[in-house]
Image (cartoon, rainbow, N blue to C red; front, top):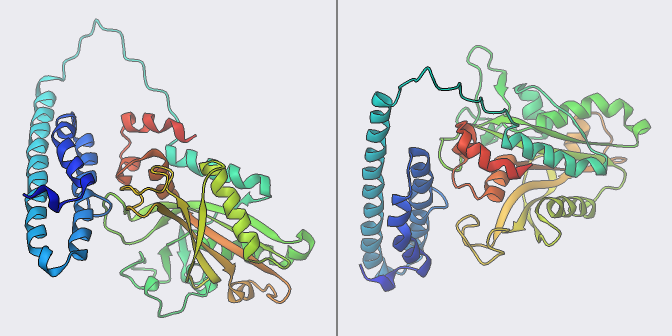
Length: 357
């Protein structure tokens, strides 16, 4: 393989691969390394495929051959190491279960809050000084709350069974696909009192469900924190100021934030919010996919149809809403390459996440 064919960072990764592989003393560590090198998204292999797509026709064949050699070498070495570790674990299970009655009993581990719950509490604490309170809603929802009240049309792909978990015996019920139904329920409940309250503002944290394959960056169950503010003459400047404050509170006063136009049925206009990658400072790394920026949340001004559904006059009241994925933020701040680690209850990994609180 001609070294000049591949970028410096890939060559560096290849040079450090044997040492990283030898350092994997258990299957959890090996799975993390596998995600770094041959995972579907954000891995070195994925980066190589992006380079191949962008290569000229003259260079594609030679580059493709070099990439195949490298990927096959990684896959074979990882597979061989996995076989070794699995054999060692079987041997330990056979011969290591000895009990000495003369030894003192082990001290049970102390319980602690899960790192994702720690991060949710931290996000709530960021917004509490701004007057936000927490609202909750059921995880089993109706189409009316999950879609209709959010201005999502009947033919929208998200409403299909390929993306959403419906109940076979109760087709009008589903597992909520986002925490936005809490917005609908809260607006319906508080709309009659909006005048006396002078507006509405709240956060909605919780679990959500979508039909995603399980891999290092996707899960059929994950967590979101959404927020909404409704008041008089609310505009994009209020939204941008609020979210810029929140991102700096999370990632430090030097955090850089940018807003990009985007489309969501329940806001108009809509935007996506990125933060300058805190891991590489914007120079480009695996986490930010070499772009220097990490997309953290979607937001926008509340669509008038959403307010009208709750009986709120959009000529008098306006607002903004935003939503962020908790796992995405947790992976970034902890430099964790595989979100499955957050759900496997390995105490060794969970102890390393203590810095999230």
